[in-house]
Amino acid sequence: MRSVVFSISLLGILALPASGHHSEAAFDTDTVVAFEGTVVEYVWRNPHVYIVVETNDSTGEPIQWQIETSSTPILMRGGWTQDSLHGDEKVAVRVHPERDTNRNYAILLTLERNDGTVMSAASADPRGIVSASSLSGVWKGSGGQTEAEFRLRLANPALTEKGAAAKESYDFYADNPVARCIAHTSPWLITTGLYLNEIELGDDVIVMRSEFFDVERTVFMDGRRHPDNVERTSQGYSIGWWEDDTLVVDTRQFADHPTGNGPGVPSGAQKHVIERYTLSGDGGRIILDIFLEDSEYLAESLAGRVEWLYAPELQLYGYNCDPEISSRGFSLD
Image (cartoon, rainbow, N blue to C red):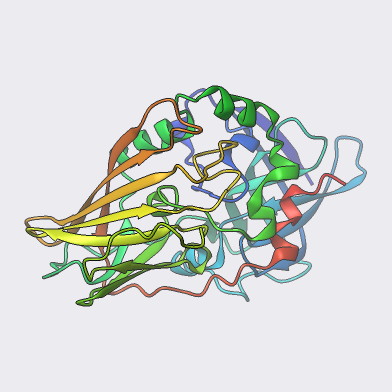
């Protein structure tokens, strides 16, 4: 067996699969480890599919690498199945290693099988431009530059003193809610470009489903205001209305969430999110403008834009987060 470690100077050369689970910051994206080995475990569960590969270290001693990949919905759209790999299969892998730990833990870039087939964690995109007549249907994040820029600003917001203290004390491995299968909230939830979203339009209620953690949001369209006394929930309480052809979704009453406003930045009772959904002229995209404020933790409000692509040929898959698997990447034992 052989193992090679090399560095890359441009992050854009090798695209790290977008992951809302084990944060991209946890991996050294400047370094690629490449080696050949034998598959000893292939775990087809969410939030990550895991591949354990045995190889030899520089002294010839056997070691095992635990390799994190994407979730099953993303992999299925990329051609993977629960039978894609089997024990004792010889493979060659390229991975980004985890930073700042002593584990042989990494995120997958590519895996090459004996027959020369190269597999990655990339997901399939919608086929061409298909026109929708309304916001109803299945949509997939475009993963474009505006989305990347907005997510970067979401990850590095201006913080209040309380927000900065919370981020400073946040322990990624001990405090991450994903380890307990607790879903992300808006706006992070709606900017995860690899996952599908479905909108079901109704007169009094609009239902928004995200493939990511099986989140379902209800938007009340019957003219009500935000209630004063209502149980705060992870996804908040949403009311909506139409401004011409634009759907406006106004959400308050978010429950406390340790990463609700970004990595290590909580959200709480003051959080307020407005989303504006507008169908593009060609019907192939939703232009989604987002506004976020939370005076308790954020020193400034944030605004940005993402786009969703119409994807009627794609289907939402069940996520069914498994707490045992979800906590696997956060255990340093």
